[in-house]
Length: 107
Image (tube, rainbow, N blue to C red; front, side, top):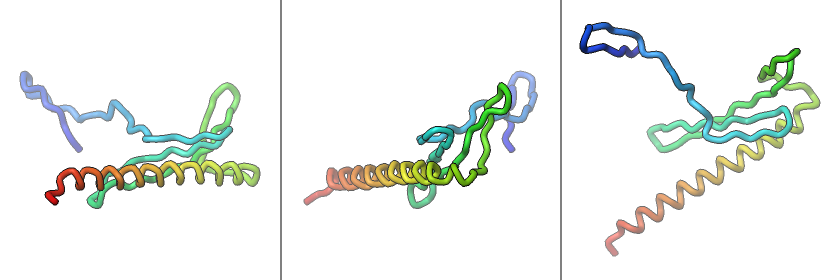
């Protein structure tokens, strides 16, 4: 837990998260969506994916992480596209790392 302090009054208040973390990439086909999240780890970057299905309940749009039989093929296609995007990011990061190390090479 972190706190902000007002140096003028000595007032301490808990920090609130004003901005939600947003996914780095989203894939959507119909009502099925994949959100790709970037996480910095000791070894570099790791990507995680969450899947959801949106639906309308009356006038309100909601989402769920439950999928029916008829959603599964579309879910697989969304997962495939998310996987392809992550793979492309990893390739870009790897080639950028090689280019940077080649620029600093003293051959």
